[in-house]
Image (spheres, rainbow, N blue to C red):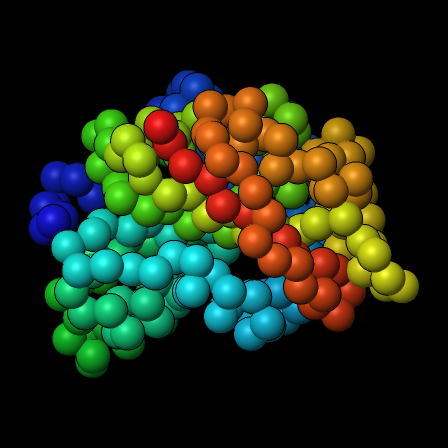
Length: 239
């Protein structure tokens, strides 16, 4: 499947109903720009650059020739670039919030001459105008832990809309702490975004939101301690 320019346009929208993700939804009130920035740097250092959960994610994704795969969340621009290089006959699209990462990824992609790679970035509230059933598989990475329960479901319903029937959705996010220090990232998230956002992650029940959004076959594939947090990889399907 080739991805045309029209399919990758990004539009502003006043509606929150069709969001894939927004860094500042109406339910989120970040307490201090500097603290939020420091938190994102912490996420980068502790989670995005930890290789423990990358291998299980790649194994579960199992890209096939001709598929179109979306990587949505922090670090997606460089992560999708990695997959595009490994699987040249599969199309990869990244939705990334960090413009620096996108610029870095585009620079690398141009040098590597990867025609199967695209990246999109947006600020505040924007709508990604992909048509229903556009993607064969979707990765939702670190997209949910900072959202209220209401916005988690809205997020996942939009993901479900753009996944094809029978398509696979892999969600990787912060999970229930099971050892000393593994609650640090969640406690910082709670400070920034409120207890409602982190409650399901603290209890390990956050995969239930995939079921509530209409996905079937929701199951945990693996869990991985990542210094001051714990990541879980969850698989689901759109019937």
